[in-house]
Length: 412
Length: 145
Ligand SMILES: [Zn+2]
Image (cartoon, rainbow over all chains, first blue to last red):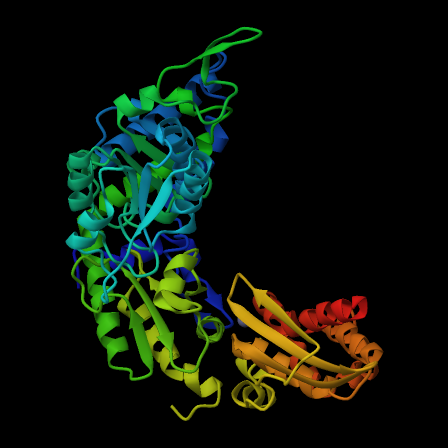
């Protein structure tokens, strides 16, 4: 059905071959975290067996090896998102830490009273709370881009909300609840015209579609390793060099300094200025292996594969009368995420019942409570695909969904 | 764990039935309880006559487990004393935490024993105990007044 060798890919993921309660596993919770191929697991294991040392310190062989591997991982990330130099790539714990870093550093450095920060109502809490704090501390205003009936941000909304007082726009490229791909290019162009900078949360997009930060024009771009088959605890902050250079350090401590005296310190150059303390080298190695894996398959092939699965699933769900899909019902600017509700059945029960059929999905507010309130829903159930999902997963899902209401005593 | 050990007939009936889902006239206390992680959100209303829970009801929304557990609890506590109600709460929470396993001891829970299997489902324990914790909070506040 597509340009990737699915059978071979599935074999790369040990976790997927497991049975739960005698049921084949259909892992459809990739928006939460993704599984790791042997290539990633082995790369981390090899590093621990042969190359583990503290990088950028000491002159022994292991320290040198670890430094080389760490720097190489950074270069792989740079190429993956097409940044200009590795000085613009900062390793963090994940997208959440990256967003907090930008808010605490760039945000507090630059936001003044009565300035405006604009985010979307569909943001993940990690792209809301840091800006609430900056706005509160600085007496600035936090404004929201709202969605139209289809769940999308319209051009009019962009022009209405981003004003001459706007200094920062921070927005997810892909909604983790609705799967909508936001008009980033339009937002960046308009924000730049007005003099605001734009932070793009790529946690849900970078694993699934081609990213070119230069073409996108984003001032900052963040993503997490574990959502693209890498380990948890490693993530990336990309920032334009001229912005990063002017920013205050976020964490202070070892490895991020030049000179320290009793009362003062000067900071190391980029990117080390933002990497205080011993870094997650093992995580960086895993992230590198994950990106290599993606590149070997081809990111465009992954996008296309997920698109076919999502489109097919959506058509099936739309034909079931008691299922309501939240957000767009067509594939225009939409990634591999579908949020839905089942009439008369709470999303919590949906997740428990699907789990008993071997189908792993997520139910809840998806760390997006303002969006849930906006949609007037307590929670939704979410299906999210990745490259190793198959039509078999979809059929298993649809079969399980058709059985949900029966368990709660409804005829159909 | 098989589904029919969780979604039993009794739980389904209580989930669908709305006989306890209403407002009381002038309740002595209305106590809200919610699980932020999953969105179960109930408000328990109680009417006391001295030491006796004269009437009880709830409003709100949530999953089948939380709704059924609340409804079953309300059936049990109507007309009994505060002390007896607290004994039920302790027994129920003990059952879900697997600290009380003796069937004789669990007998006082009557229909609520149907929720025993939830103790094998860590993800749903909060749903089952929500109403009972809320009742305990409500009684604590009533005693202060
Ligand atoms: Zn619940």
